Image (tube, rainbow, N blue to C red):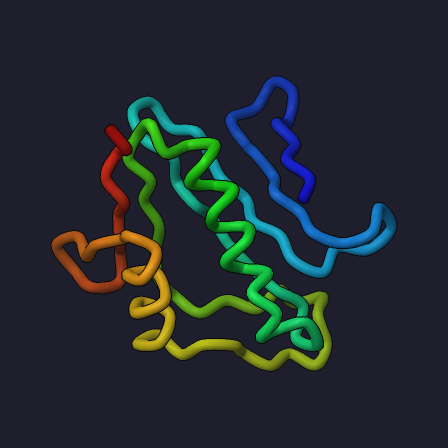
Length: 116
């Protein structure tokens, strides 16, 4: 697992895979009072290996002292072929709930309260 804070930016990247190949990743933006998970993606041929769970656990470890928020919308990067989606929206929200996230005012946005 690589965690890189982008210099002169609020972006943090979490990546799994050899140095020359990214098979799973997440982008997190540090906002003023919370962390926003922009996206989490796992290369289609590596789905089912719990890579997204490992990345989300790393995000929670890194940012868990503050609220973490995200949009629970299925996402597949354009560059990954075959462009096959993973979990549908209902499955994705259930997956986030298993990791301690709760629905905001609408069910498409979730948050995880700060630890402690």
